[in-house]
Length: 85
Image (cartoon, rainbow, N blue to C red):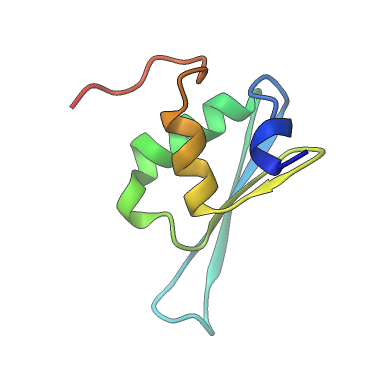
């Protein structure tokens, strides 16, 4: 089963975001969410799809990187309302 197939939008999730002027000196930001769907929404709508480099979302069973976060946000079964542009 692939990461995308086993991702549970309703499981608690943690978001880790590296920030800093260079890859060698990064500060790690952390945020906990009640659901994976909320973590994905935060990543896509607050951080922004163009700024997901260094962002990961972790649940008990999976770890997502930028491409996977983007794909899950765009899936037809994504459970939250998306930001309209």
